[in-house]
Amino acid sequence: MRLERKHAVVLLLIAVWNVYSYANFTRNLYDAWAGGEDRTTGYFVAHIVLIVVNLVIAGYLGRLGWRAWRAGGRKDGPQDDTRGDREDAVA
Image 1 (cartoon, rainbow, N blue to C red):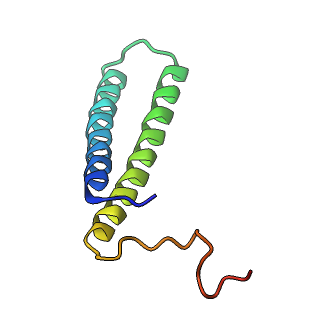
Image 2: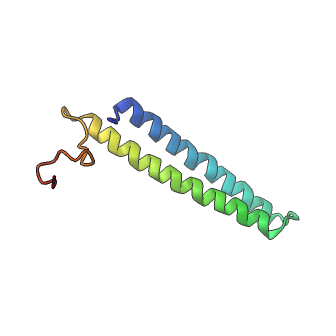
């Protein structure tokens, strides 16, 4: 699949939104912990895992979006080495 600039924009916006929303969520979770809210340790651990996973996803989507953005400006499009039609591929 060839990604175009419009796909890159969507991926980058989703990545930025994930970082923004989970940074806000992290701040709220910290405020709850610092304020002494009566929550179990499992509550904080589960939410920290959610935060980490979503920030990793945001990083991956951001990287994919950035690569698609850069490749979208080329005349020949992005290079796809997974098709198996390279000259150095063994038949």
